[in-house]
Length: 149
Image (cartoon, rainbow, N blue to C red; front, side, top):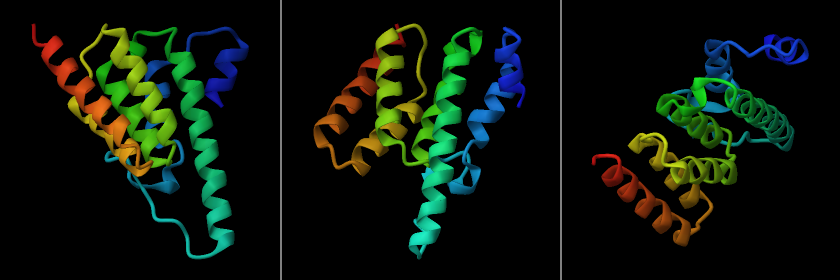
């Protein structure tokens, strides 16, 4: 609600509120909020429909927060970037996770956490995209060595 009100009023959204939204978006579909592991798919088709609905809504919220974070210093925070990668992975938004991490890596403005790369690698593994796994591992190695200079 605060997100909507802030946008309508043309205000910059509070960074703590943005962090909370990313951390808890789709929380029912996260096995562990801090680990990026999705819950197992439900046993029935009805359960899976509910899960997909919750995941889609959580993904939508995270996307919106990323857009809003551009107006703040939060966008350049390694912890925030990691939370976004965790959120996307937790909600089985593997393509979004990979795309976001690659984009943040290419900016070279901040040192990404190793765990951020690991979430993108996990996403690529879940998609069974071995070329992407290799590319992300190279990015992680390059990012870690580039940022140590």
